[in-house]
Length: 206
Image: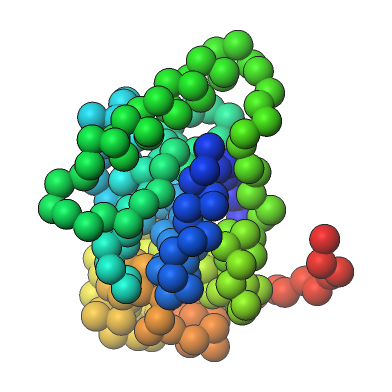
């Protein structure tokens, strides 16, 4: 399963790590989908930041936002993360993301290495200091596999749900990234129903 590299620009990593634990879980799933070239559940384009910038909208324990760009060649960059306390995004937050995006584009054009980017480890949940990171990552990978199968099948949701031996509302929850509705066992059974085999490797932690 191909996973694009995620890099944290400026203080964005520390800012996300300062989110409440439940918010970080949700952030982990949404960023995990982005790394698999899938859309997060709730997002909007941020043209005021720059071409290709998007905002992930997280509605867990308050309103939180992560502005990122996935259109650049080298990696996905998290530009800025913050708690939103008013209806309109503050100009200060837009300007921070805009400045960081300009810096990334400039560096990429010169192929420069930088000191103030935090690279991801390969497990977004571990990066966000969540205690059950391995469980969460496995569940994410299984949900991504279901989403990819549905997209590749070309079936309507009702038809795909029958193949996966689940209901259409539950399949819709998978496609929307509602991870809290699903155990690993349930996701494995859905994939097995369409002939997918699951393998798990156990190795020493880095």
